[in-house]
Amino acid sequence: MKGLVLAALVCALVPSIRCVTPEWCYNGPECNDTTWPVTFSAFCNGTRQSPINIDSASAKPNSNLTAFTFQNYDNRSALQLIENTHNTARINLGSGVKISGGGLSGSYDSLQFHLHWGNGSSVPGSEHTVDGRRYAMELHIVNTKSSYNGNTTLAAGDPTGIAALGFFIEVMPGNATGQPEAWRNLTSYLTNITNSGDSVSVAPGISLDDLLVGVNRTKYYRYLGSLTTPSCNEAVVWTVFKDSIKVSKDLIDLFSTTVHVANSSSPLLTYTYRKLQPAQPVTTQPDSSSAITTYSLVLMALGLALGRTLY
Ligand SMILES: *[C@@H]1O[C@H](CO)[C@@H](O)[C@H](O)[C@H]1NC(C)=O
Ligand SMILES: *[C@@H]1O[C@H](CO)[C@@H](O)[C@H](O)[C@H]1NC(C)=O
Ligand SMILES: *[C@@H]1O[C@H](CO)[C@@H](O)[C@H](O)[C@H]1NC(C)=O
Ligand SMILES: *[C@@H]1O[C@H](CO)[C@@H](O)[C@H](O)[C@H]1NC(C)=O
Ligand SMILES: *[C@@H]1O[C@H](CO)[C@@H](O)[C@H](O)[C@H]1NC(C)=O
Ligand SMILES: *[C@@H]1O[C@H](CO)[C@@H](O)[C@H](O)[C@H]1NC(C)=O
Ligand SMILES: *[C@@H]1O[C@H](CO)[C@@H](O)[C@H](O)[C@H]1NC(C)=O
Ligand SMILES: *[C@@H]1O[C@H](CO)[C@@H](O)[C@H](O)[C@H]1NC(C)=O
Ligand SMILES: *[C@@H]1O[C@H](CO)[C@@H](O)[C@H](O)[C@H]1NC(C)=O
Ligand SMILES: *[C@@H]1O[C@H](CO)[C@@H](O)[C@H](O)[C@H]1NC(C)=O
Ligand SMILES: *[C@@H]1O[C@H](CO)[C@@H](O)[C@H](O)[C@H]1NC(C)=O
Ligand SMILES: [Zn+2]
Image (cartoon, rainbow, N blue to C red):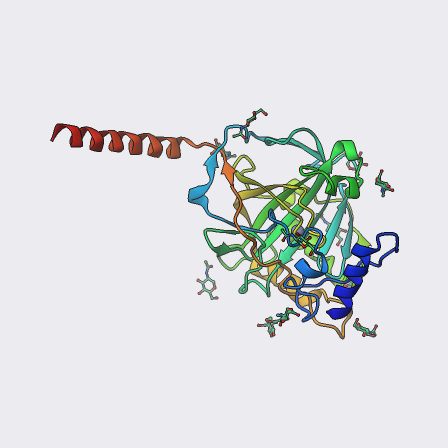
């Protein structure tokens, strides 16, 4: 840890020295998320950090949060490569996968998605929580402003350069196994990436739409935050969908029982999420039921005020 701090200090004080990015991790005693604000002090100690707990009752209605347009999310050749990055399983997407709408300022390219998990289906590991509830897993699709042409360094320097889509994954009720089929297909590649640095091509056959099954993508939370991994750049427009993807227990269990931090003699990758950061203002679609509730509260308040005046 002292070595890392020193390295970070030298990097900060002598920018001309070409510095090797220090290591970070989820579970090591000297590189876990409590050390990030020190080791990666440029941003990880900032004031709009992610993930957060979303308090659903405090989410303010915002009519700008319209539907998204998803381009190539139905393309069954868009998933290109799956890789063990030492901290997650990441799937790179081909070019032409894009999003727009959804209250974003323009078009964003979908570059990759990856997952966060706990320890099997019984120990949840989503990054965001809603009203204190942590879900089994969370899938993040990382998108950068199309004008940056996939240059993530440029996107990370723009306060809205990155649009991240967060999808919760929950255990499918009942005793189903190997469901949904697209998830069985995707998880079948985990045995090919058990070691850090391993990667393998994904065969055509599954699309993003197939994986995002069961989620009504018009219902979501929105806030401004950061990358949840170092260097925690505060460049992210977060979208966290309210509905969850339901995946059978056996498939969720595969993540924490197949992929290793380094190799077969190193620990399995577990608890791959950053701890919660201070809350941020969250907005969501105005919905008719909450409008009615607000209306009746106003009426009640008026009634009380009138009552006071009359009696
Ligand atoms: C995380 O790192 C801190 C600082 O090095 C250490 O005190 C703590 O025990 C670590 N926690 C885990 C779970 O390893
Ligand atoms: C984060 O740490 C850096 C370096 O120590 C410091 O300059 C900065 O003020 C800190 N930021 C916050 C929000 O604490
Ligand atoms: C909605 O979008 C308009 C136009 O971009 C902007 O002026 C307004 O502040 C936005 N409203 C909210 C609640 O974000
Ligand atoms: C589907 O994605 C692949 C890989 O990015 C691309 O080559 C192909 O043109 C796309 N298909 C369509 C119909 O856009
Ligand atoms: C994860 O769960 C398994 C099975 O319950 C257990 O053996 C293992 O020790 C757990 N791993 C961690 C890191 O807690
Ligand atoms: C991203 O853009 C910066 C600034 O223009 C440039 O220095 C860098 O080489 C670019 N990175 C890639 C991977 O193209
Ligand atoms: C699940 O399996 C258990 C034990 O095999 C059985 O008792 C139960 O009825 C099953 N539940 C469903 C929803 O099929
Ligand atoms: C993935 O691993 C399985 C064995 O677990 C093997 O049969 C298969 O050929 C591998 N696939 C690729 C694309 O390497
Ligand atoms: C599932 O994955 C395998 C590779 O593991 C691939 O060959 C096959 O075409 C896929 N099937 C479907 C239906 O996507
Ligand atoms: C998605 O949610 C919206 C808003 O609640 C609703 O109007 C729409 O019918 C839903 N779509 C589906 C396919 O359920
Ligand atoms: C496995 O990874 C550990 C930790 O990175 C390393 O010390 C060890 O040499 C590796 N073993 C093999 C067989 O590569
Ligand atoms: Zn993530």
